[in-house]
Image (cartoon, rainbow, N blue to C red; front, side, top):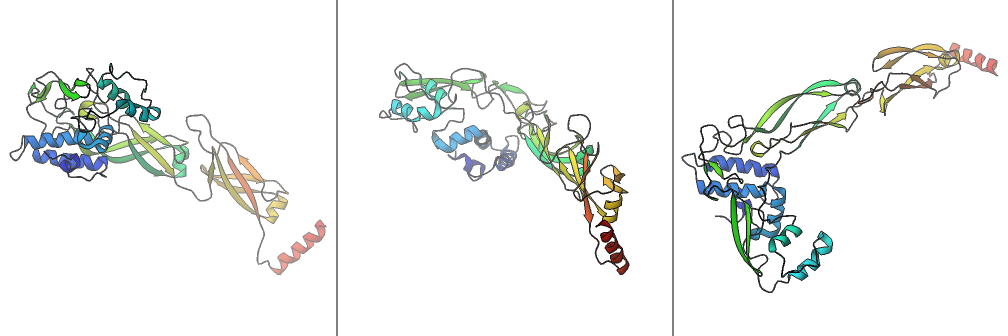
Length: 375
């Protein structure tokens, strides 16, 4: 058996979780015992490597301790901690302040499992239930929407690729034609007792069997669709309802629409985040919409009724005589729908008085007369 789990799966140490999953699925199909070309020993080897590298905590410990790591949750052999000259009190004193590890320990009375459990967060334990299978991973999906869609809300259809529970075996890893037999590794007990010689004597630990996940039973054949993983990469179409008032960078959660969990465990969630595209002539500020309206000097001086564009369409705005540039008028209820609330914000219209260019002689003359009259 190859000693390096990365070598077994044929991936570099920098491989992402998705790359590890892809490598496992490919090798599992290739070496599945139900196939003529299958290799049961190789299949077990591949599965053992995947169980470690697909678990972030186990992978972290494996990367740190290498061959001293035991995939069942502790450390195997005596390579990493063996040797009569190892000083446990110095070890505790060195790391105690950083990790919360107790330094006032009576090492004559302390069980080695307690040491590992306290320092590594329960990495080596006695008894207890088999660890729960991992919940499916959460996913994130980004989508672009228009300002109007953000204001009024909209329904969208999206397509995502993700791990779905295998329909052939309902995520169990084996279908109805398989027979459950006692696991040979643990003799149907679901637990494995390990003994380890330490500087304190023989240490005995009981752990969940890795071959049957602590159930004590194994199928005589695995699902020929998913290769025993219980999951497959599929494309799924979802209809999502985008709430009115959603803002740029905000997201919604679709519970249970993430990756399928292991062997029937709960699926993860899908988080959909939104990027609201800018719209010419409009700017969002909280629940309000900002816009500008150009008028000429005659309209500003004499007053007028002008058309202003809103997200609902065009409306009339009355300009009083003597309106100055920079004056802001409010159009009530023409802003953004309040997310998970009632009502809408306002549209704030800033007046821009445009100075005429390229005046005719008559226009200049009239303006000069107006200037004299004003003076």
